[in-house]
Length: 148
Image (cartoon, rainbow, N blue to C red; front, side, top):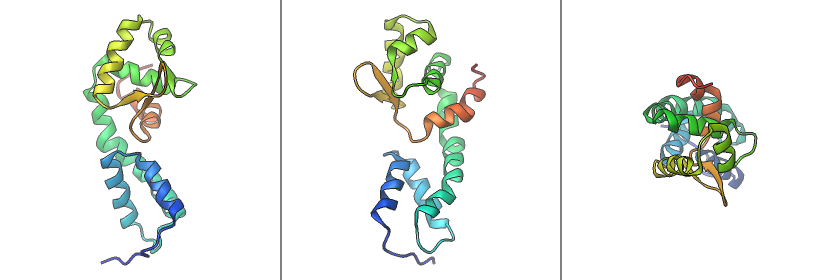
């Protein structure tokens, strides 16, 4: 059985919490990877050392499956959000980029909110709810669904 230093700095705990951003699977995965780390003391360097694997497993085990289960328009919506230069993303930007009317955008906005993939971020703005989901869409997601 591994022995760990029972004291972890508040800064390390905060960073781990921010990386999982309230998503239960992400938290479980992060804790597992930290536990499996060869480091006796969990530090910022430990988090740095597992971050690539953390993101790869989130993408492979959760995000790619979530994206594949979305409708084509839902996929276009989230990928367009990820590609936006400003974040959180305005619904007017989405209307322009997707060439759709406000009611149409509103319907997909509601669907993705119900799926807990996006959330309001102020008046007329949206953001992703999942940690590193935007990065997943930019790195891999747009290619999984052949979106250009």
